[in-house]
Length: 265
Length: 226
Image (cartoon, rainbow over all chains, first blue to last red; front, side):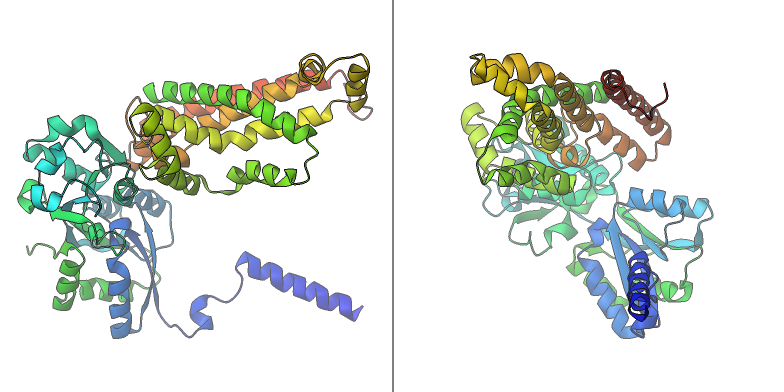
């Protein structure tokens, strides 16, 4: 009888564990503060660096989920449990603000930059040929993010138009769901060239490739905004994190990872 | 609308190809006595386990110029496979393989072995037995297989997302377009397309189950009230 009870208790405990009724991680490991961050996928390389610096300063840990800004917008409107939203543009957080779902105003944290990128073994070299690389006969497909909803895709189309090559390359364009997928198209050799986020070309897997930063005058600023969400469990710490992003030390990190600091207004 | 038609076209191609290749494969799986057969059975079922985007990613790599599929294809046809309708067909055939093969195997295995013995005693060869005994008795399984792979391809998203490149009229299937609309916050269009896709899938599945029912009704089940 006693043995049976024991097994029952064990089973119940296991069941509770599976349901996630175990004590929250914060309580278990003495982590007093945790900020839940929803971040656009172009931040996936810089965010760990920012998070570790901030954690060292404030003792506050970041738990980051990466995804597309559009998906996050739909999820946040439906009550996704995040404290801060880092979008790849300004439009999405502004919409949340307009819907009254943010705590305070939207703030700009960075400006995205564009690059033309080809793998190291490619026959074209955007680093020396610049725009002409796009017109090379060896280039059958050019990958970019979907301009209908990805900010970098929109900027890429604007740049191609401004450079006067859009009409000539239009039929070669293929679209990734987001900028990382566009990068995969090029990395796997299925597209020969990509118009990508500069931040991605600084990633370890892509650093060996040939890249050319498209001068900023070719496309409108890719302004990226963040907002603290209404009902944030940790609004104070979240605000401190946003303030930390405006500090001088962070500007240097932004540049190193392929972003620019937000414009002073 | 263009995208819905494209999805239907893709699904029809995939269902057709899977019938042609699925029937011999399922026949072999149903009747082979090879001791390592279970490895093949497991391999056929693997696309059920792999997340579609993961499968799609490896298909993308395989279709690349260094990949086995991509290099063979460009040798044959002088162009790449990713971002083409043919590429989508190949990826989708792999993705829907278990949905086509499982019902066929079940149907073939369900044929009464006594009938096969009788057929052999009457002097019919393997091919003739298959054509005149096994296949006619398995027609329901064949239809289920074709319709399941059709429906499964119709709703396919992850694989197409990974290898398609979102080209209007070529690789932008209806599920991709719905996703795009949601991403661009155009919920009205997304809802309209989703509703169309849902209605079509519902019609297809009702057809399958309606057909199953018609066959089952001929069997007397004591606890089923008429």
